Amino acid sequence: MSPERGRAGRLAKAPTPERLRRRALHYLERFPSGEANLRRVLRQRALREAAALDLDSEAVAATVDAVVAEMAGLGLVDDRAFAEGRARSLLAKGRPPSRVRQTLRAKGIDPNTARSALDGLAEGEGLDEARAALAFARRRRLGPYRKGEADPGRELAILARAGFTYATAKRVVEAEDEAAVLDLER
Image 1: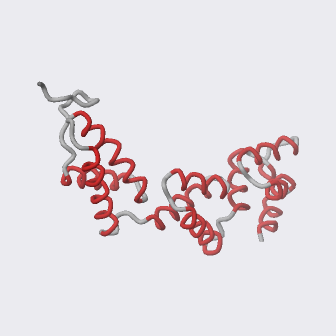
Image 2 (image 1 turned 90 degrees about the vertical axis):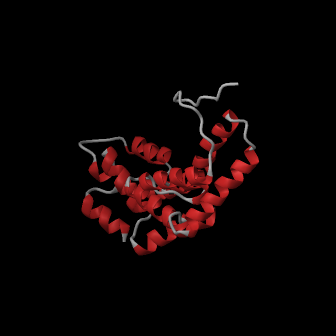
Image 3 (image 1 turned 120 degrees about the horizontal axis):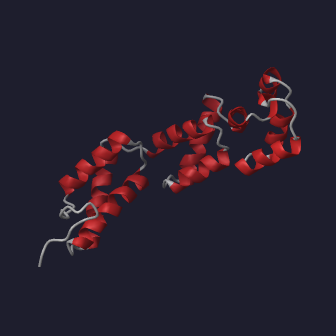
């Protein structure tokens, strides 16, 4: 019987702890990650390789869990830091807090950790729904950033579809200029 080949046409290699460590470090060099996300990334490929080599998938999954725990023990994976960084980035891009929470949940971040990260950013850096709505409005040229006349109902709908609350969307749409927006934020 010939050895199995992976997707790239190379021979599949056994997902040993050392190989999984190198793969985890390589991934973490490129992307920030929480524990659940790193586990998902490592497990996906390791189980595919295990299936190609007829290895015990439970043993491979346990090895992946051990490697993720090792990375967390070394401080390379921190759910709180990952949640804060990802939330900061998404809020600055104009994503509403509700969507930020959904994104963090999809990455395997505990809801309490996501909530505390968002609360910490709102208190410490002033990154809240109003500032996120302003960033969104600036990108989409809505509210005080629009050029010429616009339909306020249409702008409210755009902000609502993006996930902002009605109160926040209305405040942004009704603002006349940037100074008025800054006064509304306080």
